[in-house]
Image (cartoon, rainbow, N blue to C red; front, top):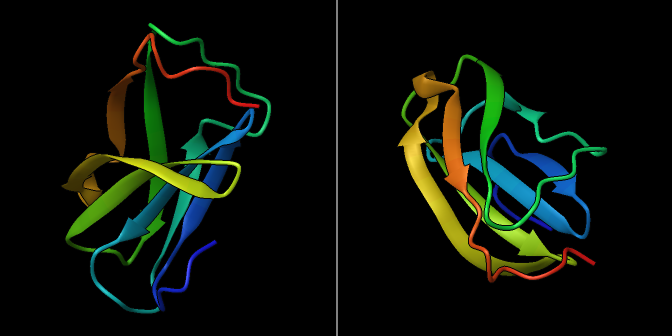
Length: 96
């Protein structure tokens, strides 16, 4: 799904995937802690995308994928925030 040579973490939500990758290369890593593979988040609601990291500085891109296809950029936030509050558009449709 990703061809960058940097730490990458992916969490799948139904048929959707949330991809977080740091904007700086290195041996550091990010682990998406929410959503998990069993999370169910409805359109029109707000949820936190969270992560833990080791040795990552800078910013993280959070992207939304559906069935492995890029849908949209969600955020570009400092890695140290370790959370992003996502207002899920009510028109996003099903994840399958």
